[in-house]
Length: 105
Image (cartoon, rainbow, N blue to C red; front, side, top):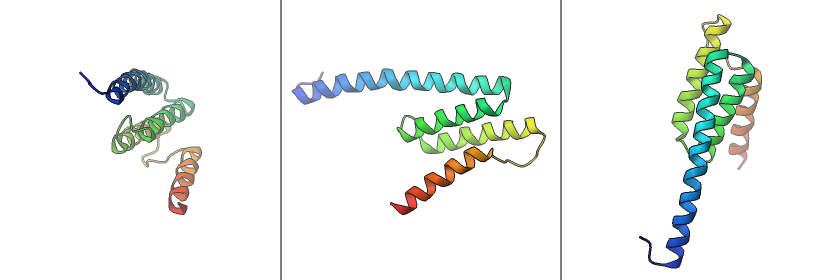
């Protein structure tokens, strides 16, 4: 058990964050399941967006996020009947913006 005042506060903070992170993970998993059932671009964009947010907030590792997005992209490509792994244009534009921001900073 924490002894100091700051350690007690940190414990409370960590417990709150754990609950929030667990909820976010659950919502993301449900979005991925929904996409796998429907295979629609709208659900794809929602799932990818949620995965990106989890990685940004360090709830999941960035490589795990990349792996999940890659797998979802493959599913979407097979639905379209394409062999290549092409992202929808909106997702590509978002990624380019993020990369350019990081390069500028």
